[in-house]
Image 1 (cartoon, one colour):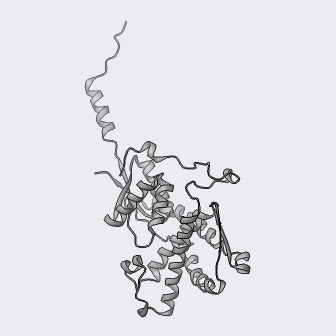
Image 2 (cartoon, rainbow over the protein chains, first blue to last red):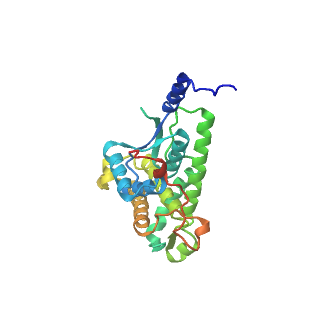
Length: 98
Length: 177
């Protein structure tokens, strides 16, 4: 009877390392002097599913700091959010999480 | 409120619409908020921009749809959950384009505070600024008064409010902020 294959410790570590290194992306919204605060809050609620408090927090971050990271995760989903935010005429971009 | 009827003054609004018409025409071929995606190849950038442009055209059509025969007869426009998103986005597109092309005499601070230097503005500038303000006012009225928490879908035409067209990103999202 063949022995049950054992997981090689080195392989296991490599897999774990690969998973840990899967790139993570930030969806960033930049400030603009045109879009209304109430509009930006609405967009965050609609596109990102934020509640009022969280939407206002990020809107104020955009207003005061010039940018806010509104979502972090895998690239495909991040791209979708960036696209939707851009459809709402916000200046949104994708950047790798540092 | 799920439906807004707004009565506008035809003599006051008509010149603004005439002023906005060429801008809206330009925005059928130009993104109001150009996308910077330096990391992507040209084909992907074109595809991405093309999708956004198509969406922008649909939004402009939603806004133009407000000013129909009924509007020209009575000054009345109707906004509900079916056209509200498009109207809001089109207002933003036009405001961004106005800022970029017509309101270059004003600083960002002046526009954000709503206090440009009127004495230095020509009549054409004043008309452009009036468009900018009216579009913002329309957005504020819609946002403050319409129930926009849930996106509209055709399936819910008779029972608006129960749909969840989008997933809940918070479920997959710890605390991203």
